[in-house]
Image (cartoon, rainbow, N blue to C red):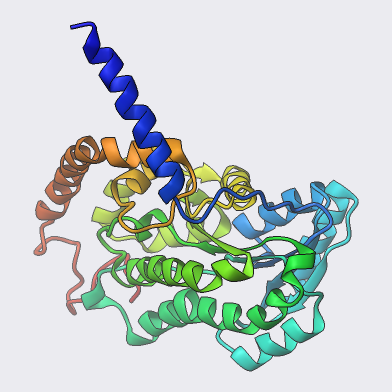
Length: 334
């Protein structure tokens, strides 16, 4: 019987050695001090918190948004709290040509954070097509526009400038599809495929991709979102507490600096990352072990987790005040 623990230790050592040889990309550290970090959606919420923290760590920061007044207020608040002056850029991420002009004007980017996002709640059946198109254009196409506009200069002299990062702001709704998030989840799940393929394309250029999965975050956008949530969405969202923008920004910045591909922000997000690792790149031996050996347990947990949500959704009474007389949904995008 004494040989069993010895065999287990030998097995784990062999597994560790094997994983060390297999894991790709290799572990990396991406510094932020004295480097140019470009953050979209940087005038409020997670983007603004991230700009504050990056500036306080000595980064050269540029924040991009559409509203010049909000950008100036954000720049002033960052200077007030950190003593650092940040640059601002005005553009709509749906406009590739304007983005290209912005990228040609700013210093070459070392860390690109694609943080812009829009969410308009409601069931797909009752959403307006213009709202569906807006979410796809901002969340998914806007990210493609940003990366394509920034890449040429990001690649220049990369060996001299050191490793770079592209961070894609997804969502826990990009890990699991939730009631009322049909279009939003489609755009955020799309970022997963974009990130995996992009990392393979850019690994030889020393550019490393991180995919961030924040839960509900206490931002101005969440306040507006809650006003439009259907009843079932409100019940599901009540199962977890929102994080602060500062907490999510810290998790994001730490994930970028470690080159982590799947970056969770809370325990539930961590379990989701382990359970849905699939073909995602992995640098950490410890996390790889957890992905391999915890997969069955996490699948069981996920089934129990989803049972609760499906119970809520299946009890929805479509003949009640959930619907208006004209057939449209209350608290939806209409």
